Length: 297
Length: 174
Image (cartoon, rainbow over all chains, first blue to last red; front, side, top):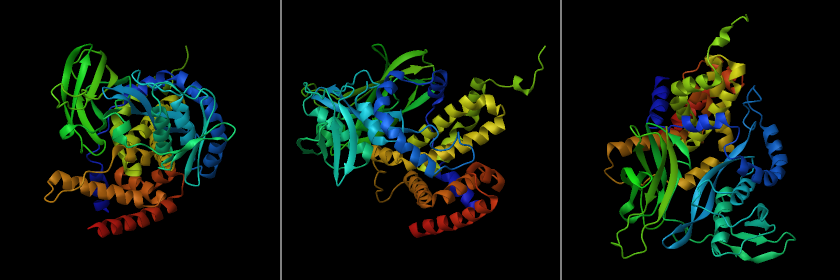
């Protein structure tokens, strides 16, 4: 049976996990990372809790109830927020973890909460999105009060469409309905990624992540020649820079990844910047940019 | 004077640091064998470490804490799969780059590893868990039975069926 041993060892031999000790410490110091956000989500998530309880009971696994899978259920969902690019407002994606067991409800709660990245915004006020269901090939989102008008126009609708489609793992069109069930226009499909999304987006590090030694930055981009220039800045000073290479470009967003060495840097707050390559020589609108604050320990 | 017991050992924070230094990478790799996706595995194991910190007062012993961590990682990996966050991550991350003819050794390595991880994901859940604990973590049958809350007999049968299925899945790929 030594072959299986070698096989499994080898299968994960190239997995070098990012260092998360800083984040773990931050979470063990405080009970919740962003209490404000959770409070906003709580109302929406309450209804989900009763459903979740059933799921947990039907599949209770190991001996220790406190370790059982559903003991403190939380879900990680991608959420799209509005940010600025030289081409106008576009959508940026954040991954956020929310207590609860219902991906749809979690996604709506996050859409109505403050983004972690201060450069992003959302047009959806608390109470403006009530619930989401997928039935008969249509995703139905029920609107509450205070649904947006605003200058972002139908980008806020695309924000909901992209987010709930990702949360429910479905490309079904999204029908908005009023609280009393009246339909709002026709079902909306997701507009092409390159039209509505920023052409560069950082997934990791998350905003405010504590790093030491080195960290891995990851994201998606569609940038000329698949080149994604990045910088680590302290204030206006560039202390590290380099290029990541995405797995492709042009027709959609492709993943990129790069290691950033922060050893020898003074502890404190830095900004990690990723951008699209600008080949226009200043003629074009300029690059799309995404940033994250990191804390060097 | 109060009697000083074995609890003079570690505070929760110290225990967290020690356990993290010793087991973070290995546990993330264990979770990758179960959920396939590294980013999801990091989230899963991070949550397990937060949980073990909260429970340190009752565990107090590094070996028991490690057993708790293993169990927590297996359960949370299962939960992550159930909620299909992994699928979301995969959609977000996009597929592996296509293999070009004359691929270099690194690409072949990547393919072989992806093949094993795909085969693991194709196994029934229990078989996958037992194989990962048996052949990656080198746990005994009794330890696996404890971790999964099943009988040693069940461990044995899941292990032999899982090994057979994994081999046949991998042969098909060749």
